[in-house]
Image (cartoon, rainbow, N blue to C red; front, side, top):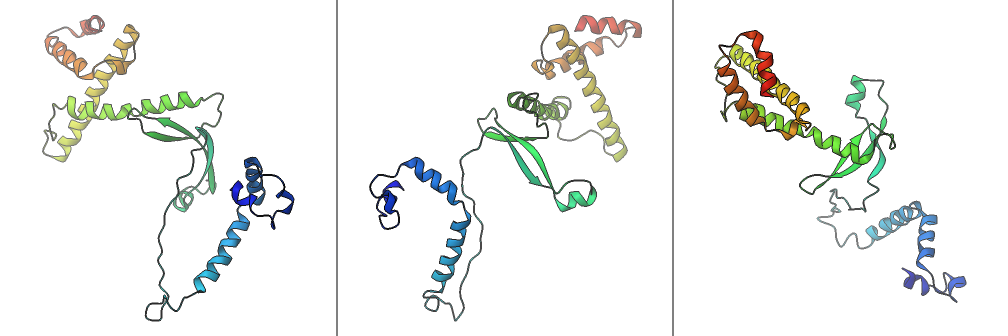
Length: 233
């Protein structure tokens, strides 16, 4: 661009005696803005489309195509504010919602190396650091591990539930959820004593230990179970 401007002596007579710096080009672009370029495009498009229009017609008709595409732009800062439009459907259900809403966009890199964008309503950058939000969001994905533990580990890789009737299926699901919570509760208590995160423990290993111990403790007096669990942890 500086080379092009340097050759425009008639258009830039005051600059003909000295080279145009790159910073001057950048400043000029900022002053120009987008509106003149849009106007120039509209004028030239109308003029150029009219040229040789009849030659390119199809059975007397002008042929047009319509499609959409995107351009790749440089990434903005890792922590920025974005404005998003609230859908008419959402505003119909909750009229108090604003037309646009402001969210904070935090970029993070997942374990696979792919870059993700996290949207959050926690706008205070001092209180909620971007790194802390990214780490918090990673923990959210641990729910996928929980689903796997519940549906595969606890059910012994079975493809279906055992029950054949709807009422039995519902009963079995509630039972599985209760059992899963009990195993997770014991893992959480054991993790506190071991001073580690519960997710550092193996769910499958904990499940097998508890299954074995509970079968062995069937004949134990109920009053002795709490002390037994304490030793187990």
